[in-house]
Length: 170
Image (cartoon, rainbow, N blue to C red; front, side, top):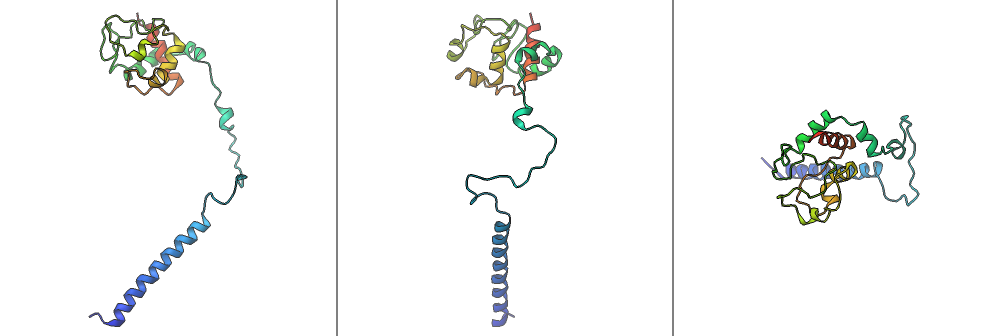
């Protein structure tokens, strides 16, 4: 069934396919190469104007006090669902301390709750809007070593709405 001529054709076909594959890869890399060999003066060949402002100009920071003044406590109550796994608003502590009256309360001031040493170093501060905003952005970034494992709320409006909701709690 297999003679020398058939074996030679199979090996030749395999070598030919490998050669085509390697040459195709080389041609593709050559034609569609990105980076390398351009030096430091790389410039975009052309720019398509979409009408949008550049990223630096588009994102103008709004002061948190302004966001807080326009915040919606009802929307903040929905955001609080993320917090309710560890915090209560009925005056009882859970994994985290209760959040009743947290706005304008001294940091680490709930009697009987075992705060982390890192949080106790911030006990001279007050949980006002700006402090809560900074903490809720990144708890571990604001108080390195805190027991709070929550990653934070990336959206400014979510933080403002949450602080507005917490301010309504007695």
